[in-house]
Amino acid sequence: MVESIKVLTPTRERFFWALGRDTVQTGRCVHQTCGPGRFAVVQLRFQTDFDGPGVVLANEVVEEDFPHDDFELDEIVDAISQGVLAGLSEASPDNEPIQALKITVMHIAVQPIDTLPQHFIEAAQLAVQQAVDEAGLVYIKPS
Image (tube, rainbow, N blue to C red; front, side):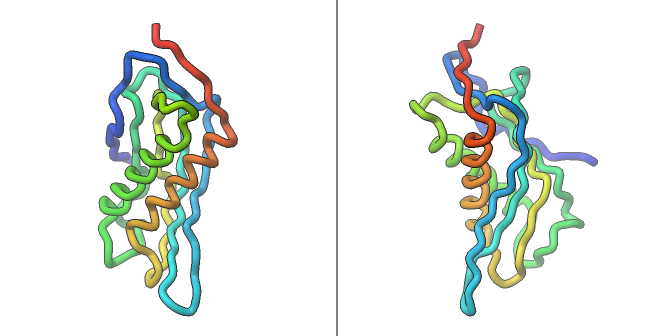
């Protein structure tokens, strides 16, 4: 399987936060009613990577497996990257960056009527927060 990779932040030369361990999290933005609702589910794998650039987003979902005719997969992955960056910014306890991280989009679930790209921003933010809550953060001083 070929994965597409996008560098979200460059490596920083100062102190930064890193996840305490690898984890897989599922972010859900689901609110369905009898009218227009919201539905976006994304499963992300978070891996500590001290050899790569700061934060990298990789995508393992292939276009053929993406079941939505109104949006391109790239549009959804861009929304996920926005949510990841927002989530990492919010999760930092002291505004130092969270770095040394490879995040892989493993699965995307959509609902034909209620899914919009912006719902994936919220779903990705939730997955980041869950990853930080579960794995914890460690403070790293670059050598």
